Image (tube, rainbow, N blue to C red; front, side, top):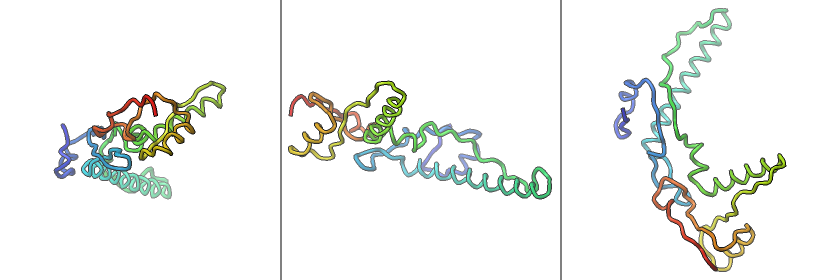
Length: 172
């Protein structure tokens, strides 16, 4: 059943045995460079579920510690475990693919790791242009080995309509 993120979550979660949350369905424009972020409702859901998990873990550790002193396997009663949660697109995993600048950093790191194993590899040449400057932009492109023709894309890679706009730059 789909959750209504605009209604109280507690009664809805009480009817669930498992929750799958795909955050790319709950994005809104925001952040730097137009990069999308979870809606306030999705962020509240994640915070609630993380809080439940943390509280249960504290109870579990306290029960284990109390049992360790007495030799009993568990001296304190445990509350029911939190709702099993599978976040298909967790925010930390989404960030590098939603923001082309972060994606570039990850690709460069992966290429370096592969080269250390003796395998030739390079990340695609790219440069982040926050604002076009007729003097500085060509210098930044040359320093990053970006040659014309090239493709210009927004920093946001998904989650907002602008992410799918691009332009072919044929000459300077």
